[in-house]
Image (cartoon, one colour):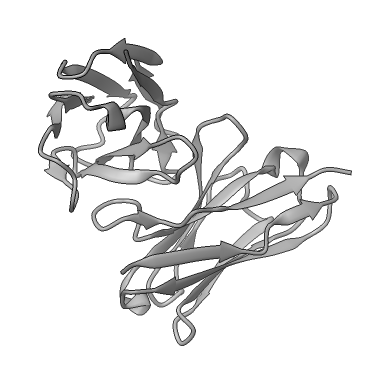
Length: 107
Length: 117
């Protein structure tokens, strides 16, 4: 199975700051990487697919990038509503595997 | 408006069976792969199953293979998950999701399954 190592496990940032969350894949997964946001008490919502493509309705403050087998989610100009847990997901091969999640809190 | 409404969750004893349903609306159901993903209480996400548009192909992780069966009824725009030989570690909120969790993915609000004696 492909392992997705996500970091950091948690972070706290202020509004308007820029934060970056990363996922390291245990092997090549190409661009088969998605990012999800889960707000408290809600179901996950797709933010980014194919490593860098913004999902419909998602603000352009969110962006995804790739460097080899390392993938990053950048959130610019943090807003209070960005509080939640962020997960990466590899869709390269079965079983699909999620990262452990990054809990983002706003100061 | 896309809607996915899961049902069928509840309290079930270990070793017993349960069938979850997901009613879809607001999109052409037969055009999309569909999936189930679960989340144990206070834990992360785990992919459970995926089914092709026609239902001819299904995929599972080893943790549920042989115990869970995903199926669909395109005429009813409905997705199902038959869960047999349930274990305490199957306790989770089960989400129905449109697509193969990539582009166009949309998740329902989930249904809670508790496996306990």
